[in-house]
Image (cartoon, rainbow, N blue to C red; front, side, top):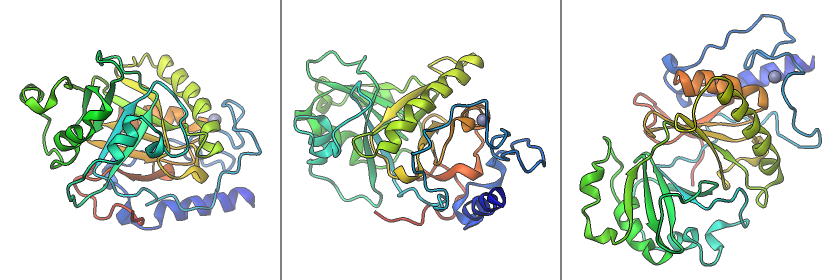
Length: 304
Ligand SMILES: [Zn+2]
């Protein structure tokens, strides 16, 4: 009975509003047995003995409909901090680039942007107290970004039209307003972002390191290098009650697919279907970055 209930709720979430799903041809078909003791999303036994489970006291909401649970956003700004946990509200964290960027004067845009900290290390920055900042869907990294340059950074990279084609980086690097900032193409083919923001909610803090370990294991086993698929930790993205939360940026950074209620059993299907084949796993699909899919009718049930 329990397994039947889980299945019907999963179907509800998956079929709630078909307009919220990506185009049908992109949906993954995961081979599974008709045996009802097998989870048809992962192909693992239910319960699974092969993959590490989360602590049993972790309250993940199993009946919350996750389809459409991503607030629409046009750009994702990912700040390299080298850490995997941050103060509860990164925009109030004194002296950080996240705080400076939150306080700039914004131009009016018909979309919202998402800003997170990340565990990325600022390997491209040489100026003291500067950091690297990655931007999607622009698919670039800006280095030598400092807090006192937040307004210039915003004007150059955020308060602008969303890209419709790959950025002309050589041309962009000639802009005088950059000062010491420098732009490079994002060197990672795929990025797997895990919300690890423990000071915001314990559930993401607990699930992210467990998932990271399993993703590393699967990626290593398949001989996928860090440049082909890198796993990084990010601050709050929304949805801790449906942890683990994973965002997959693929297709030259133009597609950002959000998964929720991700368990270790999903790591292999995510790598096989989403990282390698570019397919989307319906049962854990929350939504996507704006413009990820050409033919998408409706993106979310949420507003900012
Ligand atoms: Zn499993």
